Amino acid sequence: MDRETEIRIGAYRKAQNAIAELKSAVVDVLATAGSDGLRNSQIGRLLGIYQGHVRHQGHISRTILEMLQADGIAEQREQGGPWQIRQQTNVGAEDDE
Image: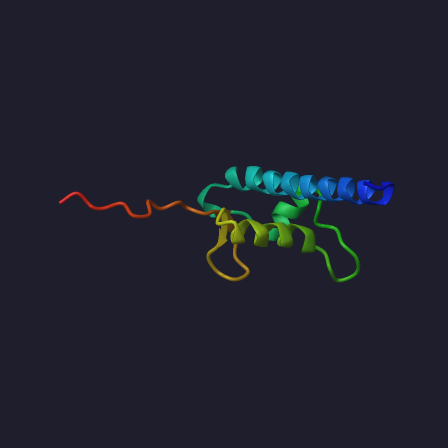
């Protein structure tokens, strides 16, 4: 493997680890919010990731929240509303009758 490929593989791994750490931090913060949840801006500011370039504040935390939603971990019950840890349901559970 040449040096350029090694550098690119290392950079990829660093980026994936960073995404995993950000997702974990957002889940940790959401876990403290209870049923009220937290808004994107609150999460971003709590974690120090709300900054962005002109007119794009909040995109980092919003992207992480959307990733967690796609993973089935977080949910936003109404657009613009607070985010929460998704309540798990027992899939396939049958009622006792």
